[in-house]
Image (tube, rainbow, N blue to C red; front, side, top):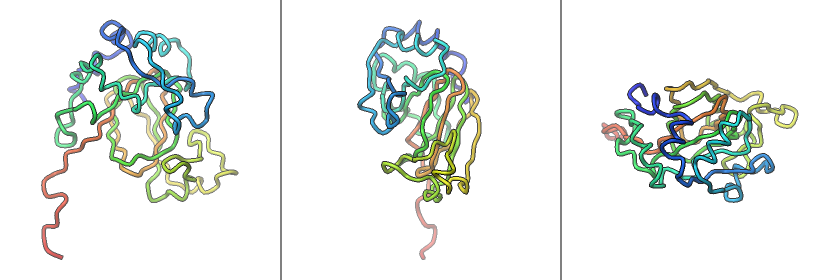
Length: 220
């Protein structure tokens, strides 16, 4: 990510100065609903970007409001210039960077994405702040107590091993992403993410498949 203009340009003041009047959609009222991640439509709110940024930089550590991938703000014309501050990793991500092939995540310290898995490969790039990431392999599904299909009953930040004893046997890989770091989230892998600072991240979904990678070189 060293060639990304976003690493030098993106900040709360930058967003406010250039995009403060743009209407954005964010998730609010998350703390009052333990099922907020699975019931996103109950939490959608629209507001000027400047109003959301004021909430983000209030200094509160909270999971109550967050701009998440399902808000689809990349599709809004007012924020489209932000995509020009990114670069597709060569040979990995489709260089067209179309709005429907990527997402923006922005929120205060304390935001949590609960343990879940996605039905696609994802490359997560950290632009502002730090994020604590935990991953569990897809083949250990039986140890994460699946819930609502793609979610887990386990609070990976503070697991209750009395209620979920098999999680003690799970392979948990973890790291802290710094600005400029990326992590690959393979399809089906369970992941939990918590922002340690005011954080901005982007995700890419459209991968470039190397030539011949999907074909057998010789007959069976």
